[in-house]
Length: 234
Image (cartoon, rainbow, N blue to C red):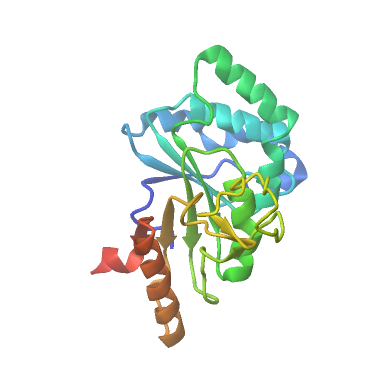
């Protein structure tokens, strides 16, 4: 699963042991200085452990974003499972101090070399995670499908703002009521929000073949980029 064409290196700055409070010393464990040794323009996967998981302090997440800001020649894919924590963090004091530091350093926000993505397996995880993902500031957003547990349709996501009548003004943080994106309470993440879909399930059964092909067709229809592990093996 982790040997695929969507990244070149893995940077795993946090781990399960972080729940014991060791995150303050993450820089001693992961060898951040090695990031500067990578060839320019390589794609670094920040994971597979989620930097937004429970137990990782807000200040540590801020420091990790500072590290990524200091390595503008690398592109970072931040892979997230705790999407709601991520959305909340971007409104926290830690993110505010990060933005102040970036402004003083003359660095753009959101960081131009950081891409945010979530892991989904079926429509339920898609519904739960894509809203917070799209509401989080990023130059680019992606979803990763490691294995199909059910059909995935990013064009039919229940709008987090609820169902509105055509006369009402939508004011959600995701689409602000743009009819082409949000219609009758349904949000089309492929038309606004998701820039790339990464398909990693290379052991498809009869049902998942259909789900895979339909999702790939949807991405093509809305001109959303895809990386498909099946393509890389052909």
